[in-house]
Length: 85
Image (tube, rainbow, N blue to C red; front, top):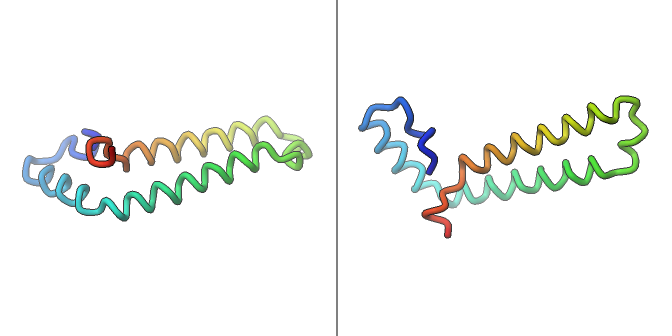
């Protein structure tokens, strides 16, 4: 669990967040799968030959890359290496 989950919280709140985080493992696992699917769809769209027809193709590519990076950031917050390995 990343420390950003409990940063700035009281000790009691941090304990509650940690408990909730561990308790929702099946939901987090499903959410990671959904986000990974979105990344794959975005990657396929960016590799599509149809994407080249846009006059602002480079902006479209940059947007796709930024979207994928944001999804990966969310996935890294959701995953808990100590529990899932």
